[in-house]
Amino acid sequence: MVLRETILDGTMQVFNRKGLKFTMDDVASELGMSKKTIYTVFRDKETLFLEMVDYCFDSIKESEKRVLEDESLDTVGKIRAILGVLPESYRDIDFRQLYSLKDKFPKIYKKVEERLETGWETTIRLIEEGIEEGSVRPICVPVLKTMLEATLEQFFQRDVLIQNQISYGEALDEVVKILVDGIIIHEKK
Image (cartoon, rainbow, N blue to C red; front, side, top):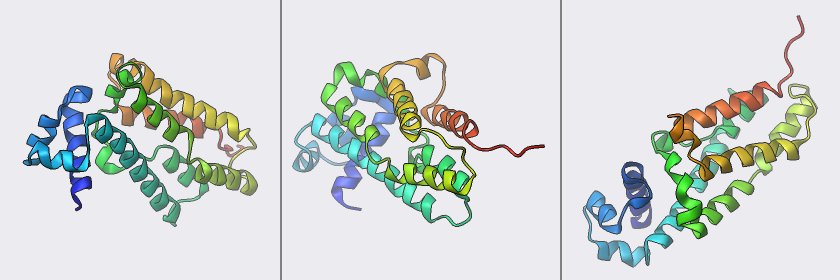
């Protein structure tokens, strides 16, 4: 594994334990390397955090690709999986801590927001495919996209998950269940 990825993976682990209050010392200790080594790759904590955002979202996109290639899933199964995609290695990470990003690290929050609002082409194409084949009722896709974006942004802006003791993974699963079960065509009895 390249040094950059090793540092990013280690940072994710430290973030999971300490939240946004982690230090470069914490990351160095986690990885058993010097801060100086970390600083040869990332000039400061903010740069490291910005890279971590891209690293996380890129991992999500890789997981989406695996869902699309999974021939055991039908279109609705793929929609369900893609909307709730969270790489297995991130399932235990406490993303609820990100709610304080907006106030404390606005530049990083902006990056998260930008990544949430882009890269929807695959999902939109799948939903349109579902509509064409009749497994998804005709819906206004931009409204669905906005609903999901707004929900995820609320998870990052408010402490609703922490207050209700809901993990990010559980919340994402519930959102997908609500959205997908509300758009699939149910068999008539």
